Amino acid sequence: MRVLVVGGGGREHAICWALKKSPKVQELYCAPGNGGIASVAECVPIGVHQFEEIGQFALDKNIDLVVIGPDDPLAAGIVDHLERKNLKVFGPRENAAIIEGSKVFTKQLLKKYSIPTAAYESFEQYDAAAAYLDQLKAPYVIKADGLAAGKGVIIAQSKEEAETALREIMVDKIFGESGNQVVIEEFLTGQEMSILAFVDGETVKPMTPAQDHKPVFDGDKGPNTGGMGTYTPLPHIPQSIIDEAIETIVKPTAKAMVSEGRPFRGVLFAGLMITPDGPKTIEFNARFGDPETQVVLPRLQTDLLEIFLATVEGRLEEIDIQWSDEAAVCVILASEGYPGSYPKGLPIEGLESVQDAIVFHAGTAIKDGAVVTNGGRVLGVTALGRDIAEARSKAYAAADGIHFAGKHNRTDIAKKALV
Image 1 (tube, rainbow, N blue to C red):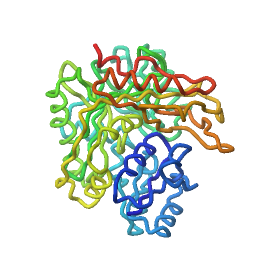
Image 2: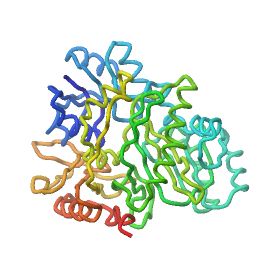
Image 3: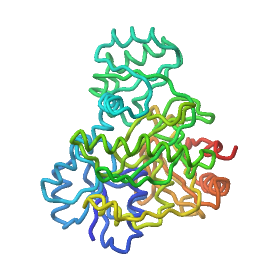
Image 4: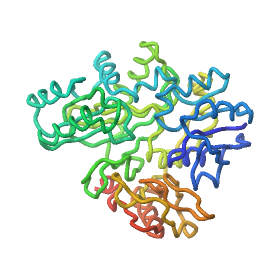
């Protein structure tokens, strides 16, 4: 089969890497791809928002399946666009991708179907939002309604900080139209957990759970990023809690979307908090997580292409998905200054000497035949091991051998699982 993956980050590199292992994949393309993806797929210089060009390329190359990686094109309706051209596409349609595209929609859905989540209110006016802060205690959780490249959630430690965040989102429009509405919700405490699931309407096949590390510095300090590292499984979280989250949150949400006339087909990603009152929903994403994909897919033993096809064709129920018993840890190597402004085009050294690890490229490019930095999160170094300790040791050993000017990474990824 001929497969086209849309996207150019670490998630798409992991997807291409996993698809490449399928004996049924004859030709693999990625639009636009990146410096690392080029080693497993043919990169095509088409941007993720060039729907017409993507469709035409797929038709010209007789593509059998298109896989959509990032959130933005999903929310903008790329699946609907390609399906109108009679192409087979893995990913939710626009009316289902709204579960990530609008936090207000999602909070209302969860409330309507009594699915556990934090108490909240939504606002369209800055004055009303700022006044609501008086009813809450710090810290305050403030979310821009729309997509904001993983940076639209602010945890403000004081009322002043919260007012500033509201002003930046609603008045200064730092996230553009994504800030036309905001959600202010109660701050939940506990362990975070990510559950990704293949979903085909009401059929839900959970993947192995993972835990991401969002803040940029050790000890969960500093501003939130798109993710500085992740690991799976979660030995410190009881299986009963994971099962409870699937039964009370993931499955009911898939069912609710069907009831709303928005059946979800693709990967549903539940961002959860394990509170003293049980698991609660923080957010939903409508696609594979980044960097969770970089630890989940290396543990997948079932052919990823088979799962994608079964999901698209409405027969996910038939597929028995198997996972390895190994642990996986991913350490993100980021550019100096990330998640703020950062340099690009810096040479990366040491990639060829990596052993006992997989290096997924997130923000790289090829310049004069050499791999250079081209993003905030540059590389994801993933290692497998008998347990978290072994996988972690291998991942850091590999990460330490890779160099570029200003390289930054957290040194405490997966430490929570060793306590």
